[in-house]
Structures are given as C-alpha cells and as structure tokens.
Length: 360
Image (cartoon, rainbow, N blue to C red; front, side, top):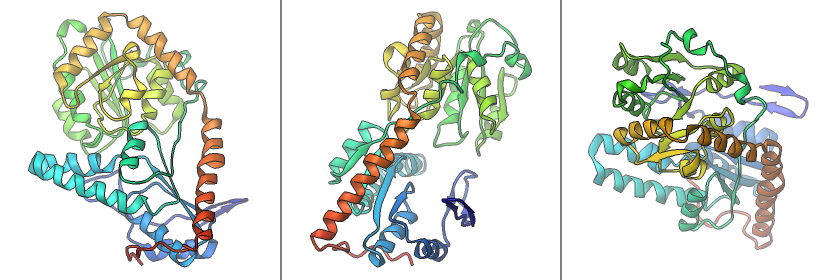
C-alpha cells in the first residue's frame, strides 16, 4: 500500500494466466474486498471483464451509494474467446462460445451505472446488448513525445539490419497470439526481395522465441520490450511503415503513436483499425490474410508514400488531446455514472434486482 497525498495505490498480487506472461488472474478476492471496504470509494471504475467487475458489483450490494463505471477496452468475446477456441476446435464451437461471452457481457455491463467504449463499433455492440448509458471516450497522443523529429539515421544499423534502400517496417506491442504477431513474420516472408525491406518487432511475449527462430536469416530484429518512451519514439520515427495484424483493437493507441511519428499504417480492416486508418493514411486488408498485407506494404511504399505520411501526421495532430480525454472521463463519464446512481436510488433500487455472482 502506497499513499502519496490524495493518491492511494493498493497492489494485490496474483498469479499469471497459464501460457501467457502478460496476463494475471486475480484470485485474492478477499484482499480486494478489504481495500474497498476500508476506503469506500464513491466511484469504482473496472477495466477487467472477468472477476473484478463482480467484486465491484457485490461491493455495491453492501454499499449502494457506490457508482460503477466500466471501461470496455477489450473486445474479449472475440479476442479472448472466439480466436482461442477457433484455433482449438474450429469456427462453429468458437462462434457458440463467443455468443455465450456476449451474453456474459450483457449480464455484467447492464449492472453498471455507466459503460464507456473506445470506438463506435463497440458502443453499437453494447447497445445491442441492452446497455444504453454508454459513452465514447477518445484517447490521444503526445505529438511532442512522438514526432518525426526523433528520427535517428543510425537506428537501423544499431539493430544490425542492412541498409538496402527499402522500407523499415515496425510493430510495437505484445508478441503473442492476441496481437497476431505471427502474421507479421509470415507477411514479411511474402514480400518481394527487390523491395529491400527490413522489420523490427518491439516488444515481448510468449511467441517471441518461436518467431525469432522462424525469422532466422531474415532482416528482422527483436530488440525486446522498451520501457523508455523516448527510445520507443526514436524507434517509431526512425522507421517507415507501421504494421499490425491485430483484428480486435478497441482504440489502437500504438497506431496513433506511429502516425504521430509520421508513419503510414498497414493493418487489417477490423476493430478500431478501421476508424484509425482512413484509406489515404495507410492500407487495410482482410484479417489473417498475410498475402494481402504484403501486397499492401508494396503498394504503399511504391505509391503515394509521402502523401500517406503527411496525412498520418495530420490525423495525429487532431488527436493531441490527452487533457481533454481526462476531462471527459471525469466530467462526463463519472458524472453520468453518479447521475445514474442517484436515479437508481431515487427509484428505490439501491440494490440490483438480480443477485450478483458470489465471488466473496
């Protein structure tokens, strides 16, 4: 427990999810309940779709003046359920379990006073599940931190990559199944040799050793996770095209950071990528189609690359709005949750009519 002025940071240990170094599954529910009982927050914001929302819901059973806000930041029925089950059992069973997951989402989020999403597609999905008190929260990018001004001519050589006159492709994020990092190596192998491309995958994850082996002998660098934001900004600004195979982005903050660095984007026409990358600032293809992605890299590099680069910068400038993001979160999303709580209390419904899942 760390207390600094008005900030209280409570850290509760939990074990890793099997097979993933990036996720943890909270199991010490009693410790979470104890923190909530001690500090009695007016508003609880939950970003997790699994155990923690039900801890919040059950806490409100005991303290009805609590307002609950959920941030729908991961399209978990697709990213966590469908795509995993499809690889294990095929499309039909995966679709069945995805539908169950959407039913679970309705059961969960309809108990919250306010739910915000990061893209319009997710907001429409929540409306279809019966959640009407929703908001669309826009995120942003710091265009001073991420800028073409940080380009380093020696970056490629520092990674041990050859200078061939072709584009340097870059991806920054987890190197795992959810982010479809494997698609990028397969895409790179489909590029024509005369393009002279090289690629750098910045990040870590369970697929990294496998992909390093698959990329042996190719001009692909795996520098690992980069905690220094200045170093990440230098990496982006020193590259030419941002690539991503992630089909379930809910906002795509890494895409915005790449655009602020002057990079057009080659990605997939799914999730928030469609909102982040208009046709004149990059190219999107079918999810999972490595041949189409490779063709789009070639088309972008040999087409109006300079124009796409300039339009990417223009898009990023329009999202230079972190202060507005937090103002919206506090003044609109939290305020709407408090108003919904007051309306609920005025109707005499201090507690939800259906009992919350017992996670105590």
